[in-house]
Each structure stands twice: as structure tokens, then as C-alpha cells.
Length: 305
Image 1: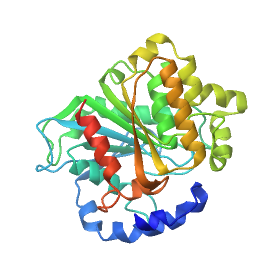
Image 2 (image 1 turned 90 degrees about the vertical axis):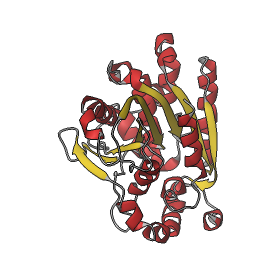
Image 3 (image 1 turned 45 degrees about the vertical axis):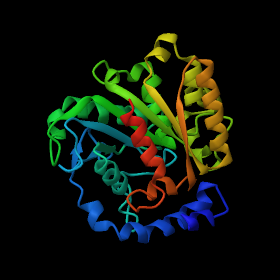
Image 4 (image 1 turned 30 degrees about the vertical axis):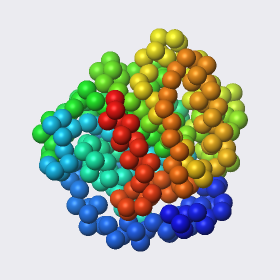
């Protein structure tokens, strides 16, 4: 993590390759352990982007009823995959392995990206992946898992993934009577929630995904929150909002303004700061033994539900 601190920039295009370069050898040293986590892949929809990976706790880490954690990665709506191409091919398997070691059935779906889809279809894909899991519980009993806890679903999204997660929670057309009541908590990590604080690297794909400026204001998480009915607000699960200490200023401000908007709707939430991290390092650090404190805090929050 000392090397991450040496990176002075915070904007994603500037920090991406230096940060990944720090963690690749650390992940490589843990390759056998990461790949040793029980994992199965499934098709939840029609295309190659409708696939998901399930990471299973071992018998040693599994509890009597194993909670379920969905993770939605980011990538600005135009990049991202549940397994990145080499040499970064241990991401996001490192995240799946980390949370499986903590006793969670951990599920990471792919979803369609621009230019192939527009709002809210990326979020719909993730919702469909979650629905598939609820509808196919037999796929969860594997490895060390004997009894998945289908009444203890948690979902975490990072960056654009956080935007997808909140869209799933707040959008009436994405509601599922057999899914949403089972969601006990959502972790929203460093999303670009507001039009005014949109990072420059996301401007073009966000316009492709959401449409013009007025559409963005309405459809981005802040607009959805402000327009939601009182009934929808009351139905939201527990929320945990996170930001990296060295996230871009635009995302830090977006998180602060989103928190104010939550409070204006009468919602309470918990929050955390990933100390020492930038926007990229938070996920690449997992399973390396360095910089995992934020994830440990998330685990504690989930277990306190």
C-alpha cells in the first residue's frame, strides 16, 4: 500500500496502469490459492454477457446458513468483465475468493455494456442475474455450502456497479416480488451518483448509456432518489456508502451530495472510507493480504444485519 500512496494522481486514466502494476505480482503470488476457491460458471441469459460466476465457501469457512453476496463491478458502462484479460486475469476472482473465505456465497455477473444497451438495461441484467440465483437455489449448494441463506441477500457495487445497484433498488420497473424483499443490505462504493460531479473519463459512455443531459439528471441515482415515491423509499434495504481515500474529487463530492439527498428523504445509512486506497486499488488488493481492511469492515457490517 505504500506504493499506492506514491501515486499522486487520482483520476482513473492516470492511475489505472500504475496501480494495476503494483498488485499484479502480489496477486500472482496468490494465484494457487485464488484459483483453488470452489467456483462454477452459469448462463443466466441469452448472450455471452449474461454469465455469472459463483464462488463457494469451503467447509471450514461456511456457516450453518451461508449468506449470499452479489458483486457488480464498474468500468464506466463501456468496459469490465467478471474475469479480466491477462495479465490481470485474477481480477475479479480475487474478490470472489476473498469473500468466499469469509463464508459468503459470492456471485459476480457480467452485464451488457454500451454501445449495445442504454439505461436501465445494464441494471436489468444484474437484476436478472440475482433473480436467476433466487430461482435456482440448488446451484448454491456446492463445495462447503450445505444450506444457502436465501433470506440473507446482500449486494455490493463499485463505481458504475454502484450506480447499477441503486438503480435496481429504486426503479419500479425492475422490482421483483420474489427478489427485492430478500435483499437485506446494499453496499454502494464510489458511484458517480450525480450529473454535476461526473468524472471526465465517464462523460462519453454515461451520455451513451443514459442519453442527453436532461435524461442523465433524471436517470442517474440522485435523480431516481429524488423522484422516488415515499413507498419506494421506505422499501429500501440497509445502505452502506463507501469511498476510497484517494478517489477522484468528483466522486468524493458525488458521494457527499448523494448522502445529503438520502438524508433529505429521511433515510439513514452507514459509511466507510477505504484508507490509503485509490479508485482502482480497492478491488485489486483483495486476496493479497494488503489493503483488505475496507472489505473486513464490509463483512462486519453485513454480519451485524
